[in-house]
Length: 292
Image 1 (cartoon, rainbow, N blue to C red):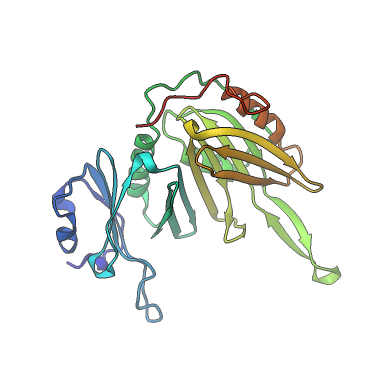
Image 2: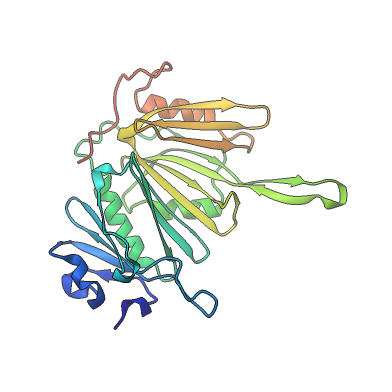
C-alpha cells in the first residue's frame, strides 16, 4: 500500500515495519527505533500536500530524517551532538518539531492527532540528546513569580520526563490588554511564559505564542542543555522586562515579561548562582559534564 495514504503516526521498531515505498531509501542504514509521520491532509482544494510523509529513525549517533521518495528531498543525517536546541509545539491539530544546530534549523510539521507514539519517540531522543555522565550538584533553588495556571501546569507536566524534577522556575501569566480607540477598543492577550531549570540537564522555555500572538490552544516547548548555559540577565524597560538567557552557541532566549511580580530578577540570580556564575559572568563552578 502507498504510505502516502496513511493518516496516523506509526512506530517503526524493525526494518519490517518500514513501508514498502520507503524501502530503497534505507540503503543499508540501521536504526534502533523510529516513527512514521503521515503527509499533510489533502482535499479538493489542496491536492498537493504541504509536507511529505517522513520517517524519523534513531540510531546510536543520531537521526535519519527520510522524506517520501516522491518528494525528491534529500535524506538528512543529524548527529545528536550537533543539536543545540530542540523545540516541539502544537496548536490544535498543527504540530511541529524543530532541531537547531549552530548552522541551521530543521522544522518538521505533522498532524498532531493520535500523537502518543511520536511523543514517546521524542522523549527517547531527548533523553539521549541530553545524556551527561556527570550531572554535578543540582539542587532545587526556588519557584519565582505566581503559581502557573492550569494550562501551563499541564504543559510543564507534559514536557517533563517521568523522573525529571523542576529545580527552579519563573512564570509570567498571559496578560490581557486593550488596543484601539473608544468604541473600537478590543481585548487582546500577550503570551504567557514559563522558564524552568530541571534535573534532566536542561533549561525549558514554555510559551503559548503562535504566529506572533498569544494563542489559547497553542503550547510550545523549547529545550537547551545546561552545558551550553552562559548566563542570565534581566533588561528593564518602562512597560516590561526582558529575561535574557545566553548560550555558548551564540543563541539567546529573549523573553518579554509583561505580568507584574513575575520574579524574573530573583530567578535570574538563582539561575546564575546555581550554575556558578558571578555577576560579571565568570565561572566558579559548572553544571554537568559534556554531552556525548
